[in-house]
Amino acid sequence: MVEMVKYAGTGRRKCSIARVNVTPGTGKITVNDRAFEKYFVRETDRIQILTPLRLTNAETKFDISAHVTGGGLSGQAGAFRLGLSRALSSSDPESKTVINKATLLRRDPRMKERKKPGMKGARKRFQWVKR
Image (cartoon, rainbow, N blue to C red; front, side, top):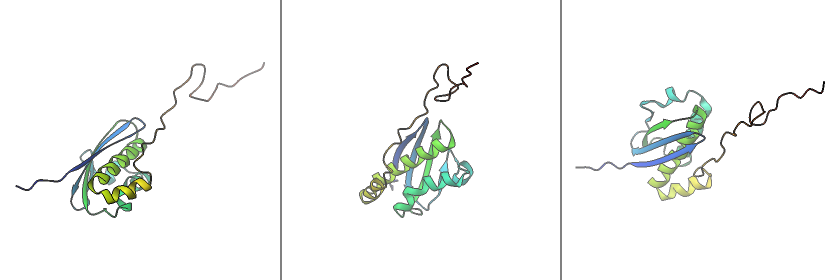
């Protein structure tokens, strides 16, 4: 019986969480059981996600399946990229140095700032009238 090699990585960004599984294959990418191009419609999100694959020249070496929840599409794309970077770095120690130099293994700590009382949003205030 042949054992299947699987590498996993978890990524988080804003309120999104992505669980990414990487297996040796032909380069097929699925997100929530849908095609990659159908889920991430914006080209900028797709380019951002595929960055770790391009850096390590592994675009056709692995099949990638991801389960993404929470937040919006931009946050989900960032979470997917971090999860994919972590999975690829665990697959090959040589690729870990390349991914780490590109700072793709760091979580983006920026979160939405909370709304304050007496204000329209986090920072915008209501217009002040003297008379």
